[in-house]
Image (tube, rainbow, N blue to C red):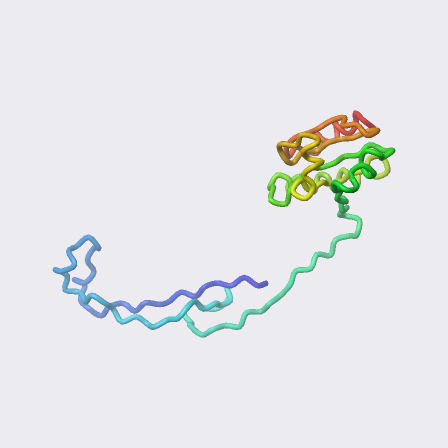
Length: 182
C-alpha cells in the first residue's frame, strides 16, 4: 500500500492592522481583533500523494499496491507444532534428541526467538528434532514440566528432560546446550 500524506489546510491571514497580532495572554475583551475568522469549511481529512503540493484540497485517488517476497524455498524452515495429544509419540518416544520451544502468540520475546529456533532446526536437521508447543492451547504439558515463564526451550533425550533455557537467549546459548546432548 502506498504511503499517504494528510493535506494541510491553508488558513487565510486576517486583514486587520498589526495591532491584531497580540500574544495569547493578552486580555481578550480589550483586543480590537475579531473573535472569529472566516475559515474554509472542511469535512473529514483528505489524502494526497507525497509528491503533490500541500496547497490543493482536491481528493486524490489512492493506488493500492502489494509487496511480494521472492525468497528462496529453503530459507525458512517451518518448525512443526506439538500438542498435548501427540506429545508422547512425538517427543518422549523419539529416537533422536528433541528441542521443544514453549511459547504463546501474545508473547513478544517468543516471537523474537522463533527465527533462532528455525535456524537451529535447519542447522541440526537429521541430528535434532525441533518442535514448538503453544502453552495456551496445550496447558497440561506446560504444567507437567513446570513452565512458569515463556519462552522456555527444553531439550529431551530418550524421553527425559535434559536441559531447559528460559527467556529469549542468543543462538550461541542454545547451540551450546544442544551440543551437550548430541
